[in-house]
Image 1 (cartoon, helix red, strand yellow):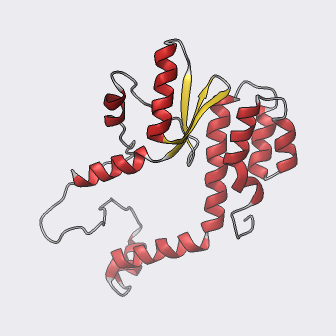
Image 2 (image 1 turned 180 degrees about the horizontal axis):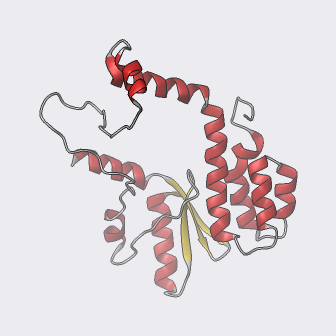
Length: 206
Protein backbone atom coordinates (compact mmCIF):
# COMPACT_ATOMS: atom_id res chain seq x y z
CA UNK A 1 0.00 0.00 0.00
CA UNK A 2 2.85 2.38 0.83
CA UNK A 3 4.40 1.69 -2.59
CA UNK A 4 1.10 2.40 -4.36
CA UNK A 5 0.64 5.63 -2.40
CA UNK A 6 4.15 6.73 -3.33
CA UNK A 7 3.52 5.92 -7.00
CA UNK A 8 0.25 7.84 -6.95
CA UNK A 9 1.88 10.87 -5.32
CA UNK A 10 4.68 10.82 -7.89
CA UNK A 11 2.23 10.42 -10.78
CA UNK A 12 0.19 13.37 -9.51
CA UNK A 13 3.32 15.53 -9.90
CA UNK A 14 4.09 14.32 -13.44
CA UNK A 15 4.34 17.27 -15.88
CA UNK A 16 1.40 17.42 -18.25
CA UNK A 17 -0.30 19.82 -20.67
CA UNK A 18 -4.01 20.21 -21.42
CA UNK A 19 -5.65 21.42 -24.62
CA UNK A 20 -9.16 22.70 -25.20
CA UNK A 21 -9.59 22.09 -28.90
CA UNK A 22 -6.40 23.67 -30.32
CA UNK A 23 -5.68 25.96 -27.37
CA UNK A 24 -3.46 25.12 -24.42
CA UNK A 25 -5.40 25.73 -21.21
CA UNK A 26 -3.04 24.39 -18.54
CA UNK A 27 0.49 23.12 -18.07
CA UNK A 28 2.31 21.83 -15.00
CA UNK A 29 1.98 19.01 -12.49
CA UNK A 30 -0.85 16.61 -13.34
CA UNK A 31 -2.86 17.43 -10.21
CA UNK A 32 -2.73 21.15 -11.08
CA UNK A 33 -3.63 20.52 -14.70
CA UNK A 34 -6.52 18.26 -13.71
CA UNK A 35 -7.90 20.93 -11.35
CA UNK A 36 -7.78 23.50 -14.16
CA UNK A 37 -9.39 21.10 -16.62
CA UNK A 38 -12.18 20.29 -14.17
CA UNK A 39 -13.00 24.00 -13.91
CA UNK A 40 -13.22 24.22 -17.70
CA UNK A 41 -15.44 21.15 -17.99
CA UNK A 42 -17.66 22.16 -15.06
CA UNK A 43 -18.25 25.50 -16.81
CA UNK A 44 -19.00 23.84 -20.15
CA UNK A 45 -20.02 20.18 -20.17
CA UNK A 46 -19.49 20.06 -23.94
CA UNK A 47 -15.87 21.20 -23.68
CA UNK A 48 -13.46 18.80 -25.38
CA UNK A 49 -10.29 18.78 -23.30
CA UNK A 50 -7.31 16.46 -23.72
CA UNK A 51 -4.44 16.05 -21.27
CA UNK A 52 -1.01 14.97 -22.54
CA UNK A 53 1.88 13.49 -20.58
CA UNK A 54 4.87 15.76 -21.28
CA UNK A 55 7.27 12.81 -21.03
CA UNK A 56 5.55 10.49 -23.50
CA UNK A 57 3.09 12.59 -25.51
CA UNK A 58 0.38 10.09 -24.58
CA UNK A 59 -3.10 11.18 -23.56
CA UNK A 60 -3.93 10.90 -19.86
CA UNK A 61 -7.37 9.54 -19.03
CA UNK A 62 -8.92 11.24 -15.99
CA UNK A 63 -12.31 10.64 -14.39
CA UNK A 64 -13.63 14.14 -13.67
CA UNK A 65 -16.76 13.07 -11.80
CA UNK A 66 -17.33 14.32 -8.28
CA UNK A 67 -15.52 16.96 -6.27
CA UNK A 68 -11.95 18.13 -6.82
CA UNK A 69 -10.83 15.88 -3.97
CA UNK A 70 -12.63 12.91 -5.53
CA UNK A 71 -10.90 13.50 -8.85
CA UNK A 72 -7.45 13.91 -7.31
CA UNK A 73 -7.84 10.78 -5.19
CA UNK A 74 -8.43 8.76 -8.36
CA UNK A 75 -5.14 9.83 -9.96
CA UNK A 76 -3.14 6.65 -10.29
CA UNK A 77 -0.38 5.69 -12.72
CA UNK A 78 -1.38 3.60 -15.71
CA UNK A 79 0.36 0.28 -15.17
CA UNK A 80 1.41 -1.61 -18.29
CA UNK A 81 2.17 -4.94 -16.67
CA UNK A 82 1.42 -6.98 -13.60
CA UNK A 83 4.23 -7.72 -11.20
CA UNK A 84 4.65 -11.26 -9.98
CA UNK A 85 3.16 -11.77 -6.51
CA UNK A 86 5.73 -11.94 -3.71
CA UNK A 87 6.83 -15.45 -2.87
CA UNK A 88 8.65 -17.06 0.03
CA UNK A 89 12.30 -16.37 0.70
CA UNK A 90 14.31 -13.18 0.60
CA UNK A 91 12.55 -9.83 0.06
CA UNK A 92 12.79 -8.59 -3.52
CA UNK A 93 14.60 -5.35 -2.63
CA UNK A 94 13.19 -3.60 -5.68
CA UNK A 95 13.84 -6.50 -8.06
CA UNK A 96 10.88 -7.46 -10.26
CA UNK A 97 10.48 -11.00 -11.57
CA UNK A 98 9.52 -11.32 -15.26
CA UNK A 99 9.71 -14.17 -17.74
CA UNK A 100 12.63 -14.08 -20.20
CA UNK A 101 12.72 -16.40 -23.22
CA UNK A 102 16.17 -17.24 -24.62
CA UNK A 103 17.77 -19.95 -26.70
CA UNK A 104 19.61 -22.74 -24.84
CA UNK A 105 23.02 -21.39 -25.88
CA UNK A 106 22.12 -18.01 -24.42
CA UNK A 107 21.20 -19.58 -21.08
CA UNK A 108 24.41 -21.63 -21.14
CA UNK A 109 26.48 -18.49 -21.62
CA UNK A 110 24.60 -16.53 -18.95
CA UNK A 111 24.90 -19.32 -16.41
CA UNK A 112 28.68 -19.39 -16.88
CA UNK A 113 29.03 -15.71 -15.99
CA UNK A 114 30.12 -14.59 -12.49
CA UNK A 115 27.04 -14.28 -10.30
CA UNK A 116 24.85 -16.33 -12.61
CA UNK A 117 22.24 -15.44 -15.21
CA UNK A 118 20.39 -12.71 -13.30
CA UNK A 119 23.53 -10.74 -12.48
CA UNK A 120 24.83 -11.10 -16.05
CA UNK A 121 21.52 -9.92 -17.52
CA UNK A 122 21.43 -6.86 -15.27
CA UNK A 123 24.99 -5.96 -16.29
CA UNK A 124 24.14 -6.35 -19.97
CA UNK A 125 21.06 -4.14 -19.62
CA UNK A 126 23.00 -1.41 -17.79
CA UNK A 127 25.76 -1.49 -20.39
CA UNK A 128 23.23 -1.24 -23.22
CA UNK A 129 21.50 1.67 -21.47
CA UNK A 130 24.78 3.57 -21.25
CA UNK A 131 25.83 2.74 -24.80
CA UNK A 132 22.52 3.67 -26.44
CA UNK A 133 21.40 6.43 -24.07
CA UNK A 134 21.45 9.24 -26.65
CA UNK A 135 19.77 7.12 -29.31
CA UNK A 136 17.06 6.09 -26.85
CA UNK A 137 16.41 9.72 -25.86
CA UNK A 138 16.03 10.69 -29.52
CA UNK A 139 13.65 7.79 -30.15
CA UNK A 140 11.59 8.68 -27.08
CA UNK A 141 11.34 12.29 -28.27
CA UNK A 142 10.27 11.16 -31.74
CA UNK A 143 7.61 8.86 -30.32
CA UNK A 144 6.28 11.46 -27.87
CA UNK A 145 5.97 14.12 -30.55
CA UNK A 146 4.37 11.70 -33.00
CA UNK A 147 1.77 10.57 -30.45
CA UNK A 148 0.77 14.17 -29.83
CA UNK A 149 0.77 15.09 -33.52
CA UNK A 150 -1.35 12.06 -34.42
CA UNK A 151 -4.06 13.15 -31.98
CA UNK A 152 -3.98 16.91 -32.44
CA UNK A 153 -2.83 17.32 -36.05
CA UNK A 154 -3.45 14.03 -37.83
CA UNK A 155 -5.95 15.66 -40.20
CA UNK A 156 -4.08 18.93 -40.67
CA UNK A 157 -2.24 19.81 -43.90
CA UNK A 158 1.42 18.87 -43.76
CA UNK A 159 1.03 16.20 -41.07
CA UNK A 160 2.64 13.37 -43.03
CA UNK A 161 5.50 15.59 -44.17
CA UNK A 162 6.03 16.86 -40.63
CA UNK A 163 6.08 13.29 -39.32
CA UNK A 164 8.72 12.28 -41.87
CA UNK A 165 10.82 15.32 -40.97
CA UNK A 166 10.49 14.43 -37.29
CA UNK A 167 11.91 10.95 -37.81
CA UNK A 168 14.70 12.14 -40.12
CA UNK A 169 15.70 14.99 -37.81
CA UNK A 170 14.98 17.67 -40.42
CA UNK A 171 14.15 20.67 -38.22
CA UNK A 172 13.71 23.12 -41.11
CA UNK A 173 11.20 20.90 -42.91
CA UNK A 174 9.40 20.10 -39.66
CA UNK A 175 8.95 23.78 -38.82
CA UNK A 176 7.84 24.57 -42.37
CA UNK A 177 5.17 21.86 -42.37
CA UNK A 178 3.61 22.93 -39.05
CA UNK A 179 3.78 26.67 -39.73
CA UNK A 180 0.07 27.05 -40.52
CA UNK A 181 -1.10 25.08 -37.49
CA UNK A 182 -2.48 26.77 -34.34
CA UNK A 183 0.30 28.40 -32.33
CA UNK A 184 -0.19 26.31 -29.19
CA UNK A 185 -0.02 23.05 -31.14
CA UNK A 186 3.13 24.24 -32.89
CA UNK A 187 4.80 25.22 -29.62
CA UNK A 188 4.03 21.97 -27.83
CA UNK A 189 5.02 19.87 -30.85
CA UNK A 190 8.40 21.63 -30.99
CA UNK A 191 8.83 21.11 -27.27
CA UNK A 192 8.23 17.37 -27.51
CA UNK A 193 10.38 17.08 -30.64
CA UNK A 194 13.29 19.12 -29.27
CA UNK A 195 15.64 16.19 -28.58
CA UNK A 196 14.66 14.48 -31.84
CA UNK A 197 15.55 17.58 -33.85
CA UNK A 198 18.51 18.91 -31.86
CA UNK A 199 19.95 15.88 -30.13
CA UNK A 200 20.22 15.19 -26.38
CA UNK A 201 21.68 17.89 -24.11
CA UNK A 202 25.44 17.52 -24.00
CA UNK A 203 25.43 14.89 -26.71
CA UNK A 204 25.03 14.48 -30.42
CA UNK A 205 22.35 12.98 -32.54
CA UNK A 206 22.84 9.26 -33.02
